[in-house]
Amino acid sequence: MAEEAIARILVAGVGLRGSGYPNAINTLRMMHHTQQIDVIECGSWLPEDTHLWKITKDPPHRSFAFLVRLLSANAFSAIRLLLESRTGDVAYIPYPSIFLLWLLSWLPRRWRPQCVCDAYITLWDSLFQDRGMGAAGGWLSRLLLRAEVRALGAATHVIVDTQANARHIHRLFGVPLERIHAFPLALDEALLPGRDSGRRGGHGNRVVFIGTFVPLQGTTTIAQAIDKLRGQDSLEFTLIGDGQQADEASRWLRDNPAVSWLRGWQPADVIAAHLAGADICLGAFGGDGKAARVLPFKLYMAMAAGKAIITQHAYSTPGGCPPIPAMTCDATPDALAEAITLLARDPERRIRLERQSRDYFERYLSTTALAAHWERLLAGPGRQSGDSR
Image (cartoon, rainbow, N blue to C red; front, side, top):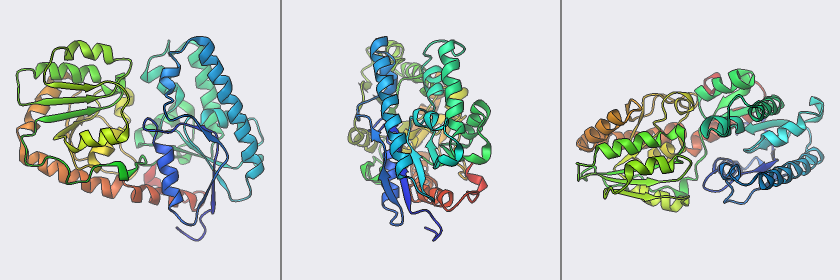
């Protein structure tokens, strides 16, 4: 790292971790291995099995109690941060950063440390766009949107995952584009299968989908495509995940002997094992909207494992990244079924995509690539290269 880089990162707020929210922990692991940065905890972490979308389904009194505890813990973290911070420090605020940033926003800017917040996901998008929790124009939606606008406005830098998401955050929350940076997601590469662990040279019959069953993933489209392929006995499908649209998808998957569904949250080692045996990995098929603004975490994993990928035409990438090596198609059951059939019958193309996937990951999405983005950001204000937005 450059000599003028900062020496300390203060981790603040109440963060999410575990296999459902691995980005912050993996980012801090990457920083810890950068010898010139001391990572200092000024906050806390929620239990690894915490998932915010599940909490929204709790009875109102339990959801309210959780929110009160979350705000209280963030207030305590804010005090620790202000007492610990000194000139030159940077505070890293993991998801969900809105609570701590909203509290800090009421302080004069000169009293706050430089805050770099994780906005790969925003609460408003997650609750009202991804999972349709109530009307997007209702009072609760408007209240949360205003709170998140204020919170993100208090951040010095906002980290997102793709160039399209950077533009979305700019339009929706009013954050200036020069303060938004599109970094790759952070993976624990030690948990991934090796690039030669797959089944190269096989019949291309094992198709794997990993993801939450929400509109962004297009899981109903995937289920309908699988239903259209019932007559192709050579194909095997493994689905890993659960979510609000799981019941809808199950109507199309019922009584299909070619489908194995691990319904429920799975640890990273289980996911890695299924990736190792995959011939084809499926991406997102949610169509326009958020699905077109992301590069799903599971595709990072698939590329790191050197797998052939099918995903929808519309997606985005981190700053400075070319299009991913994948077969793309329209986000419709017919188009997806045809793409699966074509790629399963074309071993040469699969092998070519496998090789290109791993090479792409190492160059643009690996821990080394992510560290370079952070190094430029932490070297000083205004030094982050423009192609990372």
